Image (cartoon, rainbow over all chains, first blue to last red; front, top):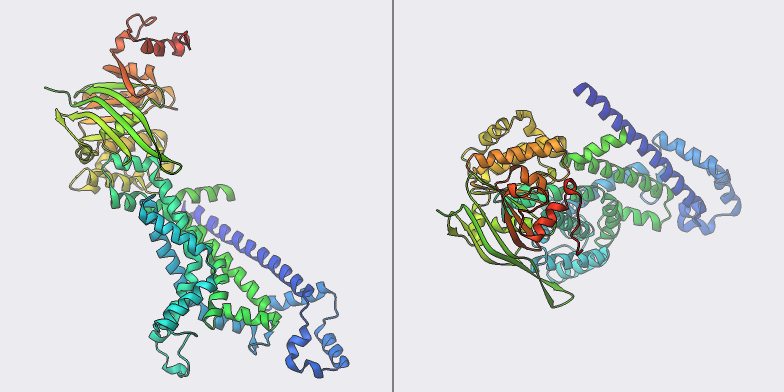
Length: 336
Length: 266
């Protein structure tokens, strides 16, 4: 059993890695094609405001030096070769290599995204359980109505509302940034960071909470209508015990799968949430890069988020199989 | 001395709201009468939708909140209201299903057995669950398996172990045989007979008349939410001359072995 299991797991891992590489190549081709066909003037973007003083000979010289006149596929292969060597290019906006920018900004975003992710997962699952267990009653209606409202509210609008209420009117939370303004980096305490993190995290969690609530609610209702719950009732199981012993695990599988596959939406939401709160993370960096036509950074971020979303989905599959062994069985059958 | 279970004139209705506030009342059970005594196996036979399962749910006190119930259900001569019956569910009264769907698909069966033992009020659920497994001829490693990893026969043994955890006086076996091969049907019926012979009352709820006739002491026929006839198995013979009720006779004559005869007026 064990000697069979290890190579199978390894094979599965290798298969996933192969799929990730294929996906990355596809994303690289698509984003490069977009870049080539976009009206972005790479020289102007690089030179900035001084572009007016750039003579046509100088411009031609730069274009020749950068290889901008080469055929697109040659430029693509050259770029791909650089990527494989770990050279993602230089971000003119941040005056740093692309990989360093992504690393720094992602670390700043990590706390924000992780907190928002946990918040939406825990709160969404809890509310979904409650709504499903009290289906059709007032509690259920309030929660469902709230979930639909959140699902249809744009992130930046929720962020503005929260800013208005908690930062401007009540003065409980700071208006912007990840750390207090005008305080040396060494003097910034953990409490300061948390204080600046709460509002953006709550805003960002709004993106993910509604789907988790609604899917969990549906899973709970289905489980409660199932034969196994009828049998548990006939055995004397009631109320909280019924939910805890016979429903939670059944409802957890779809919620976990959804939560892990929502990393893409989470990143999309962070672009808006970080902009509203001037939070210096990867989302805000994406906006800055786009506004400054910083092509190397944009391409790098596209590839990085591909890995992020792929990893989320892969972990989601594993966790789902752990909670619901029937899913593991189906996976094994498919890969055979 | 009165029967262990005595159901008389049981009626159940549901109030449903459709489109706004228009209220509709559905009456799936209108007049059910049933008695079962210790050591006795009573078969409740009727077509699908005749209200057989609902009767079992009523006896267990687990009708949904929008159901309204009238009539009388006595256990050991004592009239019990739904909360009192609910309190006996899993202890004095047990439901005995047979299909794998009645097991929680994402929980190992050992844990489900332990939960049954705890609900039945057993002092040491862990030990009770382990004993129940071995008593049913299942090895201890079965406890770690999930329901979809069990064979049909193992599933039935696990379900029986769970149902019998509270040593019930009354066992309600709901549709135990559909879709089973002949020898499995026989094994299930044999098990039920043995449970009755142990001094418990067994109500076998089924639409399979020939199966019921093999083991039942009495057969109660229900149709459209009411019990219409009560017959001794020996009366089902020949062309049904001993059967007084036309529906019962039609049911008997419609069996494949008796020539698939349909009532002439239909």
